[in-house]
Length: 195
Image 1 (cartoon, rainbow, N blue to C red):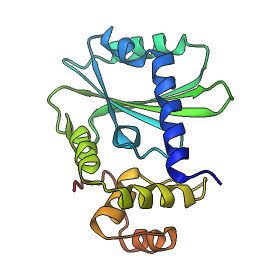
Image 2 (image 1 turned 90 degrees about the vertical axis):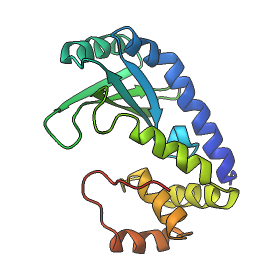
Image 3 (image 1 turned 45 degrees about the vertical axis):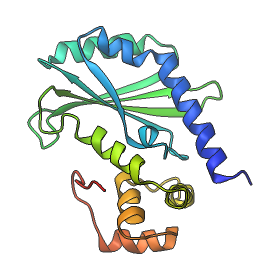
Image 4 (image 1 turned 180 degrees about the vertical axis):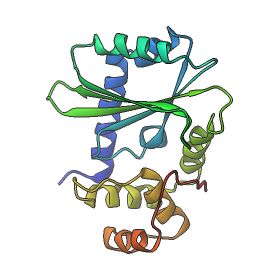
């Protein structure tokens, strides 16, 4: 079996290739928006769930600009599907986009793009969370997070922040411990936690 760190490194490299091939950051700049990487790719904790997360900011946020960016992204022949949600009047205060990209091996990568107005309540928050997580990781906690993510069944959907809080704050080290931790720490909505 490959080492957990080697698997993670290979997946991180593939994720960055997806970003380069889609030209995603330039697409958003073309409509006056700034795309910032967040989540597990930013922290170096991307494991087997092929998910790339961006928070996108513009001022003002125009729905038409968001659709224009997605129209350009959809021109990439490897984009297989795009979904849209308008959550401007919800807690998220955003337009939510999900695109699925098929890599050279036909594996699907989900690209989550959360488009929000510059200056909103969440502006920069998840970038700071990711940077704090990266700053406090040790070799031991990095390996623990990656191993628990690796051991998570593929059909189980878990927010990355749950892994990080369990491992970094509460000392969880195995998937069995993590299952018990999740039962004791249910999450509804956005989990606001930063180490």
